[in-house]
Structure formats: structure tokens, C-alpha cells
Image 1 (cartoon, rainbow, N blue to C red):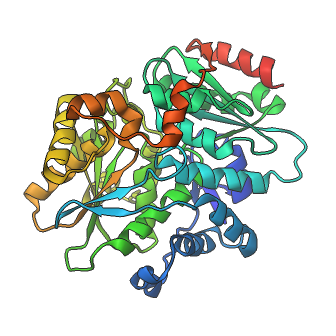
Image 2 (image 1 turned 180 degrees about the vertical axis):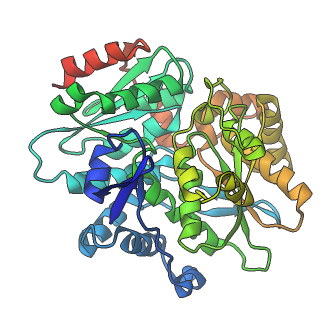
Amino acid sequence: MELYSTKNKKALTNLKHAVLKGLPDDNGLFMPVEIPRLPSAFIENLPDYSFQEIAFTICQSLLKGAIPDESLRDIIQNAVNFPAPIVRLDEEKYILELFHGPSLAFKDFGARFMAQLMSYFNQGEGRELVILVATSGDTGGAVAAGFLQTPGTKVVILYPSGKVSMLQEKQLTTLGHNILALEVDGTFDDCQSMVKQAFLDKELTEKIRLTSANSINISRLIPQSFYYFEAYKQLPRDERGVIFCVPSGNFGNLTAGLMAQHMGLPVRHFIAATNVNDVVPEYLESGIFSPRPSVRTLSNAMDVGNPSNFARMLDLYEGKEEGSTWNNMRQSITGYAFGDDETRTAVSEVFRKYNYVIDPHGAVGYLALKDYQEKLPNTKGVILETAHPAKFLDEVEAILGRKVEVPERLALLAERKKEAVSMPVEFAGFKEWLLNNLV
């Protein structure tokens, strides 16, 4: 498998280098040279395959022998070992539940696959691999669970102080062992910027083997494509086609869906659903991408003002004529943005109408799909429910006026002691901490 940088398509590398390095030296993002189209017979017969068999077929085609089949099967069996069920709300609306993994968030798929892949590629290496990850909520918990006690690795999680839920914070800060948490006095975008600066700092990269576990790492995106196929196989087959509505922050989840479409999954349309951090819906409307500082919201995992994976989205739709990239993208994706009051109303409405408890991120997706279907009725839409509602317990219970069931593995975290290092937002302090603690 060959990959290039979004900033230089002639800068080719292999999968091992891309996974372990995380970012190209030019600060672009790695992308596959080829996204192969899967056989139509495979797509038509998806109900005959298990989730693991679907994942293996996708990887076998995409990775092109970068990992032997036997090892690849082991990686998938260890990573994709929980379901992604479809729940029907009504004839036009379905929910894809992506919260059945260990951290109760969709990012378990990417984090566990990445941990297995890095462990495979890290065999025989003499130096410890240090994984840097910025989180706006769910990424950190998924990465922490995925890499916990993985030999030869240490994980450093940067999260914005006061901007994640209590249970999300406990998932990042209570595991110990090889998991270290830094509580940054800033926003998610500040955390993400500090991680990117670390990869471009020669002194750090010479002294520490650094890689990233954010969706900037290609090994996070590959497994996220699996569950689009898994969702499609569970839906009723009819002439309406499928619309995927994706609650979006850093846009890795949507990018993975676009890759699935490029591989042949017959997706009719994508909806990019955001909170008030709406730089991508704004771009889809105007053709102007204008990143800005993120604003704190109820759907905190989407509080991203400069989404990294937008560069990959542009790359997938790049046209040969000026302006055609924007036109190509807006043919496939419609953007919507909603505020916190609308989100609260949607959580209440979904419970009242369907007796279903949806989390704030899924609620944003519900609003977007509802608006889209009012303009285009008789369509079949799937909302990606990205996290268990219990991760936002106080808010969801306040909205519904009732208790929300908390899974046992989440409830146990509440009593555990938080362990985190306070960190100023300046890169110099972060660099000094890395050199003092990891060299």
C-alpha cells in the first residue's frame, strides 16, 4: 500500500511509516494512492458476511499485502469484537449505534484497530513509541482503552480543561499504567495545535519516537469505513438509496464514509451535521473555508473550529478546474448546523416520539436529517449515534427529567481518582514536559 501527503502527491511512503509517523514532514495528511473499488457482488451480498469478514475484505483490498492475511485476521478479530447495530425509528429514520465498544464511543473502532496495527508494526523496535492525542471528549477515552498496557507504547492525552464531561474526563485520567493525561488551559484546537507542533519539532522527533492517535492518523480512518458497510447490510433494500447523517467535529468520521463510497458502497448522499462550530457547513454553502477558534457547546466532541480532516475531504473531491472541488463536494454533502437549545429540544423530541434516548451529538444528527427529509421526503436516512447518552449524564437527565441507565463499566469510573498534569497552552511548556518526562 502506497500513501502520499495531501501537500505533496509525489511524496510517497508505505503503510508502516504512515501509521508510526502519523503526519508527513510537510504537515499534510497521508492518503492512499489508490482507493480500490470493491466487487459489486461483495456489496450485493453483504448480509452473507459477518462484521469481521467485511472488515477483512476491505482491508485486504485497501492494504494490498502490507500485512499478511493471517496477521490481518488477528488484528481485526482483536479490534472489531463488538457490534454496530441499526435501530429503526420510523420508515425514513434509522440509528447506527456506534457506542458498544469499551469506551462507549464510535472512536473505539479506530482506536482499537490503530493499537493493534501499531503493536504489529512496533515489533522488534528497541525504543518506546509515544502516542500523542488531542481530544475534545471521546477520542481520549477510546485511545486510552485501546492502548492500555500495550507493550512498547506510552500514550499522552491532551484535553481542554473544563470542556469535557465528568465521565469523559474520568476515562482519560484514571487508567494509569502507560496512559498519561495533560489538562490544557485552552480549547481543543489549542490541544490539536500543540500535538501538530510536536511532530514538526526536530529536537522532539530525534529524541522521542512520536506518533499520533488522532484521526489525522490514517489507521484511524480505515476501520471507521467498516461500519458504513455494516450499516448498509442491515437496512431494508429498496429504491430509495441510503443517506448517512454524520455528527461532525474533526471530520474523520465523515471522511471515512466518503472513502467507503469511493470503495463502491452505494451511498446516495452525506449530511455533515455540526453544532455552532460550523466552518464546514459554511464552506459547503459559500465555497469559503474560514477556520476560527472553537466555541464550547453541549455536543462537546464536535467543538472544533479548524477540522484537520477537511484537507482529506478536499483531496477526495479535488477537481482539475478552479472552483470544481467545491462544486464536486457539495454534490455529495449537505451541511447543517444547530445550537444548544435546538439540540436539547431534539433530545426531548426523540424520546417523546420514539422512546429512544439519544445523546447530544446524535441529536444534532437527528435535526439535520429531519431538515433534509422535509425538503426531500421518501428518503432513507441513517444517523450515526456516536456516543452512549450516559457519557453526558447530567445534561441528558436534565433534558428528559428522568434517570438514564449508566452501563456498569462507566459507572465504576465515577469513584476513581483523577490523575492529570495541568498544562499551559504555550507549546514551549508542553515540549519541556515531554523532554523531562519521556526522554
